[in-house]
Image 1 (cartoon, one colour):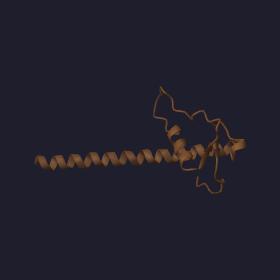
Image 2 (cartoon, rainbow, N blue to C red):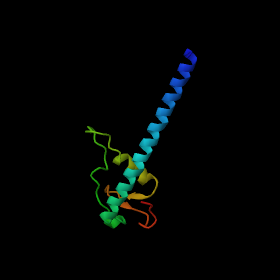
Image 3 (tube, rainbow, N blue to C red):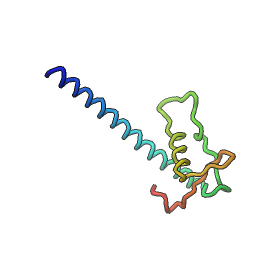
Image 4 (tube, rainbow, N blue to C red):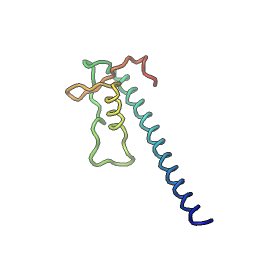
Length: 102
């Protein structure tokens, strides 16, 4: 093989690996978001009055083990207006449980 073909194959491989890693992280974020919603449903946090504290709401400064995606996923849920946050830092589900696709 010529060096040009090898370089092009290397570039294609690295682009494919990057796209695959983004797909994997996206799926992990989706499943983590579903777990957070199930956790809020189990705790009956359905409005601001029944909002609950989530111990994983803030990211650890010194993470142990694998990367914890729960704070990022929770932030995404708050930004997409699925989960609400009270001024005291408690969380609740804004949408009705039958509207959620878990």
